[in-house]
Length: 276
Image (cartoon, rainbow, N blue to C red):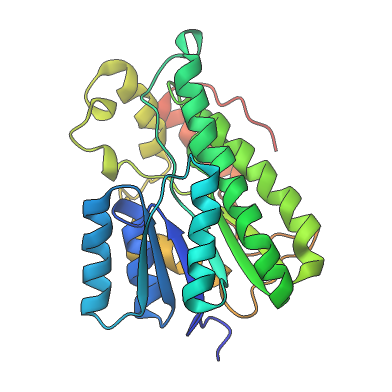
């Protein structure tokens, strides 16, 4: 087994029916993993499973609402019943709230984001933890966002939730490293999935999206399967090591921070109130 191999590893991906999650399960499956597709929408779930099975991938579909703690634990129990192990999980799913100014943030939208994002990620981590600890090996990959790192207008609820997940990830990485479990997070940035929606057409939302677009000066928006998925796979490989005080396999922010901050400031014409 090579360092980057996930062959025969049992990898769970939440939100696997479409978008980034669909790209992740395709990539894991084509690289030899046994894939668990966890998805709320039964139609996209069935389609994802059908596609993977058609390619000869050993996969399992499970309908899941990441806002339901009991459902998450039941999903992991089902994975253990079928495969006898759970080697990795990518906590990709979260309900994305509509853009809304901070002065108008509603409690119900905030609660939904925190439940499906922060709580859902925590519950999934807690559900797999005892199994990974018993095996002395486990890989957890959480998903942050550039919307949290850079703070986009109108995305306070989403960004705050993602930053909370980032903090939770760091804490778990310190606490669980001794159990043979690595906990990592990457922060993608993209506008492709907003094409044709209000986020790219209305003046207020368009201003916030300008910051997102400024993060890709080449104009290349990236692809879930060919760009994001290999990063997740590297975090699930045999020798992905993260120790307290060090970060490995995580993309929390661009490495050339001063240059990127200046670029975002210039193109978005808005102050960046972030310090590193």
